[in-house]
Length: 76
Image (cartoon, rainbow, N blue to C red; front, side, top):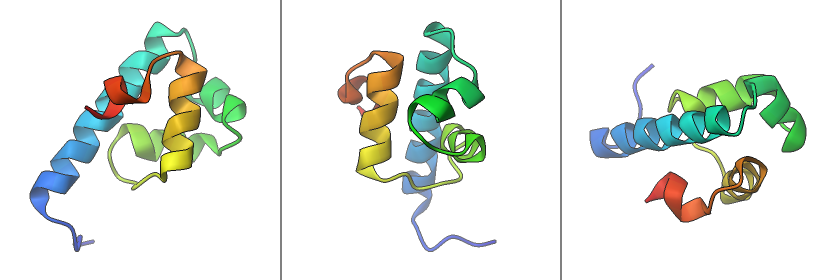
């Protein structure tokens, strides 16, 4: 499915997703555990980590809080 977003946006989403995955793993959480903490579906966490979804700011803030890192470390 083609995206209406520029390639640089898609690649940044992948970088952010990789940072989220690393922070989740460092926190010792599975995708399901993180999803439970942020009241999301584990498939949503999977899509965020793989850069295939465009998460809202609220979800990113919840994820940062759940894994114990500042939001800036995830999205910088």
